[in-house]
Image 1: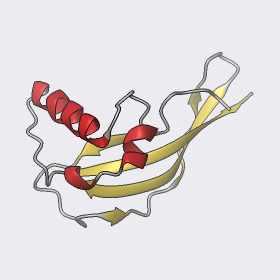
Image 2: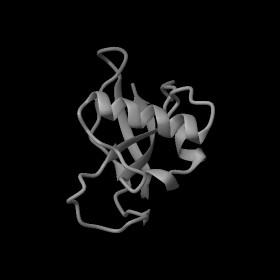
Image 3: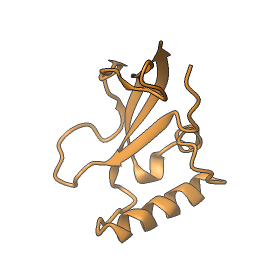
Length: 108
């Protein structure tokens, strides 16, 4: 197994995106392999869980799994609001985020 600090990632949905306001999404399974840490190793990303949450409902379990060093869920929210503001994206408390958990595997 390849070591990587993050086992989750997120992306805000555009405000015009249709879909559920929260809950699981059926988009799990393996993703195509890519080159790993050496030319003779490939890495596969397996999506293990996908959920959609409003910013105010993103659970600490997810925020901690992102591996970005946040100390609390409020710290995580503030950090992401600031990050997206720097990118010109306004994030409100009801902005939907797609929260994706994953595993990296290596194949020699």
